[in-house]
Amino acid sequence: MRRLPPLNSLKTFEAAARLGGVVPAADELCVSHGAVSKQLANLESWMGVALFDRSARRLVLTAAGRELLAAVSPALDQVAEAIGRIATVARPDAVQLVVSAPPTLTLHWLVPRLTSFLRLHPDIGIRLNNRREQNGAWPTGVDMVIRRGASRHGQRQQVPFMRESITPMCSPSIAKRFTEGSNLDHDGGLTRDALSVLASQTWLTADMRPDDWSHWQGYAQLAAPDPVATVSFDHTYLALEAALDGLGVAMAPRYLMEDELASGRLVAPFPQALAPSEPYVIVYETHREGDRAIAAFSAWLLGQGSMHEARVAGTDALIEFS
Image 1 (cartoon, rainbow, N blue to C red):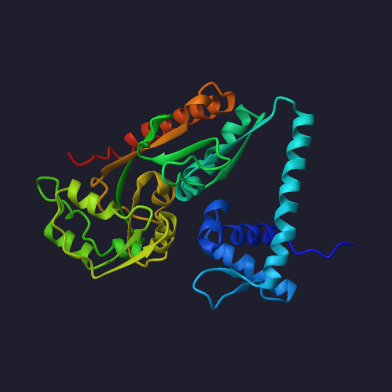
Image 2: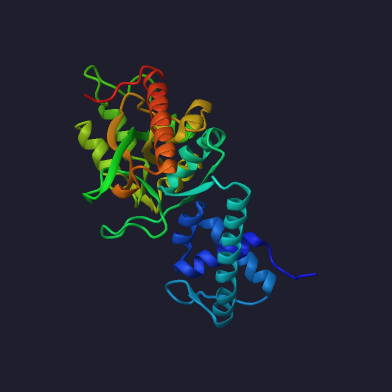
């Protein structure tokens, strides 16, 4: 009987070692940074040896880590290739579409809806990652990119499929600090008291969306004072987790947290204060325009985006700043 650690820990180790860090591994695997760190710690505990030198500023493999990576990486490649060959034999018409999408969109919007696409197209497999375009170069091994805002590259098809609007969100305990019914003045703007309370909270920001707070204030023509403190995270979904825990107020697209807002776990203290942001765009290389899988997934995304926008537009008669 083979003595092997859990496959998930090996897969996580391979991603972290190959990409050189916890953050890119979490992005590629679409899990939290904490989940990656836990898997790495579990693997080291199971093996009884350190795989990374944690005294360095970045993730550096030990001799044992390098030896394990040399064995695990090609092994996982062989498994993936074998599965692909078997699937092709079993279903000659089956294809796999590799889609790169932002982690927050993937976790909170795309994954919960994917079942409907797979029911419609059982012959198209979907592989999700977060391999972004670098200096205009198309990410290796990716068929389609979902991104916010248009790409400047002229040789790519770009199809906007969903608009978004951002607004502050916080836990119910923090929301109580805003006086209900007096947040908006007669002109629809935020009252001075509301701005004062907002500035007294910790603002939660995301490195991937560094301008959201200033964009929201500028669009609403607010002269809010600086917050008492800010806490930054790599991604919006981490800032939202912190907001759920009551750490402060996060600025985020409303679509991300529809369930949490409906259940009351999160509160939008200024529901009318919605500032439109850049739309999400489907991007693929021009020569792939006739690709069956790309066409099917693009059409599905357009449909999902339209349904989402219609649902949001009909919820609580929410009004964007004008």
